View 1 (cartoon, helix red, strand yellow):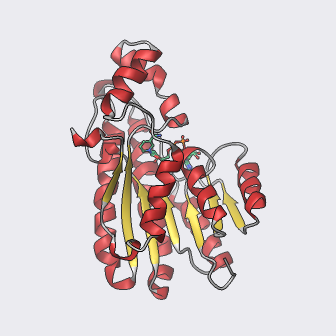
View 2 (view 1 turned 120 degrees about the horizontal axis):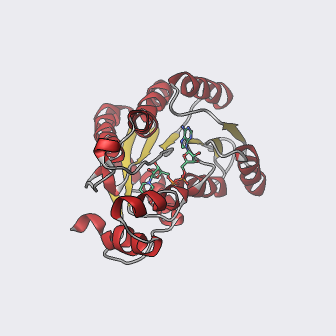
View 3 (view 1 turned 45 degrees about the horizontal axis):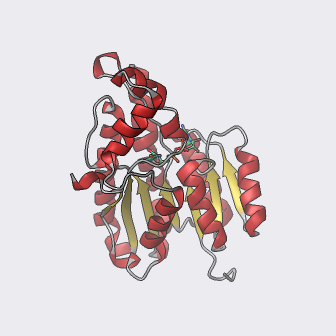
Length: 261
Ligand code: NAD
């Protein structure tokens, strides 16, 4: 890709799991990438991907629960690249508990990171997208943005919320060449899924194997975990394909048939 056509993508939570796969995909296409995430080796992960594909990059360990850090990351990104063409709101956390025991602080953190951060990021990067009459916003929601499961009150609320936010941005962005779409994955075996196994075992009184079979894969018509690459490809469809400029406001299920129930 020549520097004249080079575009810039900012991906929150891109030093692990789905976000990292999305970053690798855009790196392969020559995009400038703004990485973010809280992994202790985030600097090395970002630099490693940038070196592998020979791209420009920035890395910010901005905490998505803190609007001031989000605003700072957006300002530095705009200063360096002028505009962020593609914003992927991906950072997310999970906590599993029956509602009566659900810690207030966990509820607040999930709503802040999974939902409020997408609002703050979008708001900060919107004017530059609007000025150039081009922007692509992808919110990594979840099958839990379309359907609920017990013991995930905060997560399900945050993901239903972000689907609504996506649709609103699609309506506001249409006349400015800005599209906004949500991707709704089923279970992808990343740390966010691995880490909930102990709590799921407790909440359902099951073994690890039973949780995988009877809680996770039970929901999938196709009895396998979804790959991070499959999610990255769906993002590519929404930002790069011939359909991208006229596909907006959708919640694209990549969920092995979960929400077909
Ligand atoms: P992951 O745990 O591998 O990655 C999450 C990323 O978010 C990490 O880089 C982490 O550092 C970052 N993050 C978390 N809290 C942060 C904070 N306060 N500030 C900045 N960064 C923060 O999990 P993943 O599976 O790759 O999840 C990515 C997104 O996909 C999440 O929004 C998640 O809800 C969604 N999702 C995942 C699945 C799944 O099965 N894995 C299914 C549906 C939706």
